[in-house]
Length: 352
Image (cartoon, rainbow, N blue to C red; front, side):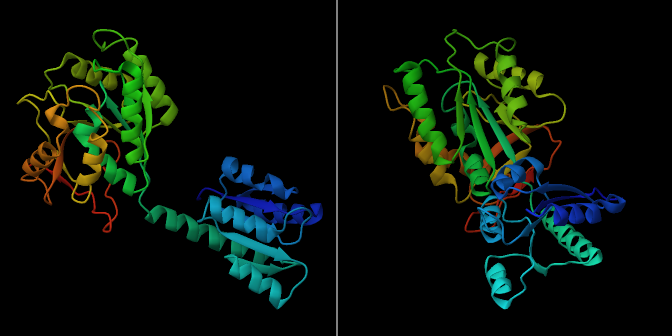
């Protein structure tokens, strides 16, 4: 038997609410939450995560049509059934114009009510199953700009797909301006792709592969529950980069997709087996990189021409004109394929 549908019934008449609850929970068809106060609906939608909402139209303080507008702004895909005891063409027309999925006149028979809920619930679940899952992305770097240099284009593609992105930078680096400048530059870069920046104010000479680095990464993972983690490769000259790789592997646990990007100190042992097409996202990557090196020396890895040359070179092994290279360490969820144009799809090609 499939999982029961989760239904919210918004009804100020307790007898009608009880009738709907009894009918829908019969034979474990649904799990029902009844709400008599329409002002509590928004919080209930967030916490209960319903498959279907049933709402009366006429209620004190807020009409069912106002609730419908509120639900559509929060969760556009949830089916909403509107009910009223006052049948009229105007009511039905207004409900349909507000994008109600069904309009029913009280009293409603138990078979009709249950039939509509099951039909709409099944259709909503089928749509959700056919839609690509939104990814929760965590990109980890030892220093400011590490992530952007390695996978700035990939993060821009994730942003275009509507994925949630967090950049965890484990130190402020050794550049001029200290933590204040690191935060200013990093936050501007993160904003280009709508990412959240977490910057650890590490003042140690080197980043440890043990504590506190492992605990910091584990804490962020526990909070975000990411589906994809990007981090440094173990095939790096820099001790800090290798330490971040080791700490990430230790903190991530077994049920994570982990991909390692090409860092600024990648050695000839860096062996990518996935090449992400970033056609259409190179400009965004360079916009991210332009946020760094605003004080003192500006590294060659931040140069737009260097970005283009590197991405063009890796495209020999992937598809499109520009690629970023990844070592896939663990793949427990399928790497995403992103929207077709106007955003170019993220095409992942394995090395032959």
